[in-house]
Image (cartoon, rainbow, N blue to C red):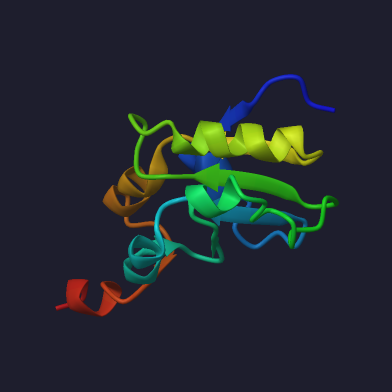
Length: 116
């Protein structure tokens, strides 16, 4: 079992986007996820995660958590929940803010308005 939460940077996460053995988890709220999220990520809001929201993810997958930005500690706290429950996990602490600022692959309802 992992002893501490590893952090990954934006370039490392970009390289994991299409890997079938990785699950990227957005721990922000559902509205935020609907509007804009990292491509191929799933939404498990932190409050749901605390109540066992991780149960549908196979433990054979590596989990990458992210939240809003490097000043938000929800990704690290979420990673700790996954770790306690037997997952291999890393936290992307740049968050959706860094991802968006770099124009990296994303999905959501606000993308069509940004294209104008």
